[in-house]
Length: 298
Length: 336
Image (tube, rainbow over all chains, first blue to last red; front, top):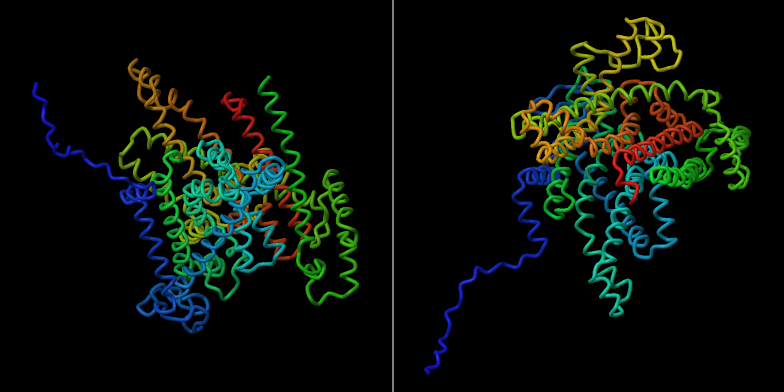
């Protein structure tokens, strides 16, 4: 019986499944999301404006000519001038610096503090968890802007203190998120396995828990920047944040509101800028949520 | 029974939160860097005035005695005295509280009525131009700084078009006689219908400004919740029976779609109470928010403390109510 000859087999054409990391996969989903791209566009625009402010702002933000006060938009002054004769366009441009800066850094502060507390509470549990969770409950028992007002009432009104206040009031949001994430990750097999082979707590946290908590933190953080920008503008509007002559958008609204009938442009443009930036971050946040964590989809 | 046990547990959980809140509010004045008395009175204060105010606020005692005294006062309903008017805050705050409550309720009604209906219509006519417009408005709505929206409303509808009044709660030339301080009720009790109309007109602009964000959120949640329910079998059955689409949507689907919507409505109340601070500042609305903001300008710390405490307490109680209501509607909650 003739042995069937072993022929060198022609390679079977299998459509090679490309190995895609979750991050790359998320990026692909995100790229298809038109609204998220619009959001990216808006934020990129404002970042460029903020970074290039000293070069693109045609006038200084802090001084103007009184003879030129409350002039409507023109070729020299695209967004008109305010009650001090200052160029609204330049002030709005510099305002982008302030809002992005406050929004981003307050969220970084909240994320760092919230992650640390959330990790401690979730990983070590017991009395540490009780204390931290109660603290979060108590902070969340205040409407956030009121808690911010309380912090500013203690520290005194200034842009820096507004940033601190906003960072503090948003800690529980991230803290609870991380804690919940840790609690569910702790039960996962790979974490148990890591513990079984004697991995140290700090390494388990750094290698397994934190990287796996990153996606929801990023999503919530992006939306958090939107909220932080509105909160900073709200504090500025109430006179509890940025102080004159800082061109903070909320503060600009408060200062110009009495001239709204005479010079509506002094109120329209700063407000529109707040809305667009916040919209931008919200759109990115929505897109990231859909891309990064299908379970978080509403 | 489970509901009762859950309710008791939920109420007991309030105690540490309320104690914590009182500690935070108590610390506001004590945590001021430097001498609080100096902060309150300013640099030019005489030593005598500083000594007086330290005495009046009890700042000379050790902190635990201060806190003990503070709690004793709060629990007996004494919220301290305003440094500005020297009047007891517990009396002074009542009309402000009524004004805030009236505004908040009206905004919530506007938000729920428009939000729920827009969400239903969007889901019903999914992918129609109405759906797209409504969701675009909702998207922009959640990103809207309410203080800017308020200013724009004031400019367009009050100052340019002169359709609606822009500040206050009533016509200052024909003020409402306060009985309950809820002006809608007061004018109805007095039977003065022209004043009632004035009060309603004063409520519209701030009501819309404050209600916009909750409205947008409610519309989005209602839409997605309705879309989910509309695919359910029993809705298809109802349709197969030949029931008119209107009844399918408003009777069968809505009832089940409402559970997530109710939760969101509960969550929005905190947003409204916070937003009231801004809305009241814009529309000269004599509510607690403006009371607190004015107090900050005057460094009237007892008012700041008590105002924040009162709002936060109301917020906590409303959340309790929402949680209990939710457990009542959705029995699964209790077993968590």
